[in-house]
Length: 457
Ligand code: HEM
Image 1 (cartoon, rainbow, N blue to C red):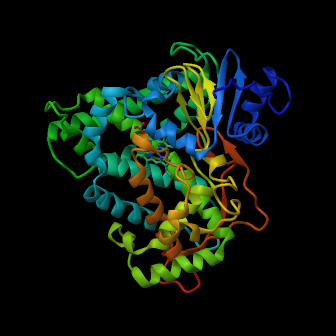
Image 2: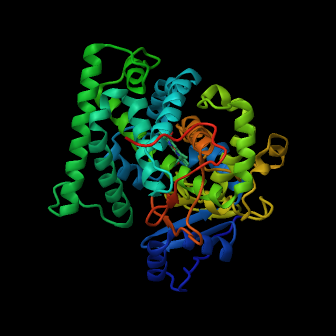
């Protein structure tokens, strides 16, 4: 039988204003409260719209795969992203999305990933080379710079080195503005004369100038430098047509945006978890020393490093960088026996489902062994969803999994993960989950160092 859900009052007990305020103050805590107080499907009124929160893996799987056509991305999110990212993979739907995915897929083929993998390990080495033993650093800032450098290099080859700081600064401004837009019910028009809005316009035009110039230069040279930009320029759809400069630009912006902050947050939380679990670091090192030894790890090593893979899976379970993603009901329907009207936004929250004791024994405990190959058959389908799933699964999943494993392997080979005694990072759940004020670490070379940490300079 299908029934209509009652409106759930927010934690303040107020049906409307309380819900909006609580959601704005701490969206993750708000969703956790909803799920614990009202169960697998709950709904809350925000202004004139009812939002649904779905936390049961069976319903999530159904939404992402079996009935995916009925649950596209919300129109409001697509409108917001489009302003910044144009018509790329993140914002398109239907036939246009299928055409784009077909053209883009070669960018994530194994041979391409192997090349990107070498960049990932080399850039991590360079980052660690520049650190001094004993120094205190904010590793979140370091990982953000690292993943941006990796994405710049793999997207545009070395040409962009001179522009990397400008690109980084512009991306930072855009992210800040995007978070504000999400919290603002009525987006400001581009001409609005506030300082923030003007910074946004400037940041967008900086990126457009740099990326536009790179596209023009590469088209003119006709050279294939093995990076993603070469691939985008060479790609053809089924009718044999290539991408226009605008299309290449939009995809490049999408990959830039989707592909660096999420990975940086994934790495930051992983380093934090490793600092709290020296026994896991010791097992990772045993495996790395046996398989890789003194040299830098590469993509080819990854298949022989199952424990490293299990660690990364467990990090993404415990601290999912994308803590929430959204769908929308394209028609009147039902979820888990409850009526859901057409146009309702539906929130799926990996952070909640991945920490639910019904699907994960002792969910708060960090235990990579649960992802060992022999134990994966025990997992409930739809209960591990850091990259979403189904056709709209993260396009960069293989890129990100390669990056997380190679960066962490390189760091663990050389350093002991150390954070100050008693430091508990405060989680901020904006576009993606990150620690407030970064993550302080102490640079401590591994005592039985296999690869020396060189001094900067
Ligand atoms: C740990 C790192 C990452 C995580 C946790 C992550 C997670 C996700 C999730 C949950 C989605 C679905 C979002 C939604 O439906 O609203 C998504 C989509 C996407 N991601 Fe990632 N991502 C990561 C890294 C990357 C990287 C490195 C790239 C590119 C190089 C990338 C490119 C994309 C794109 C293009 C989409 C849109 C796909 C589509 O709608 O067809 N992501 N990602």
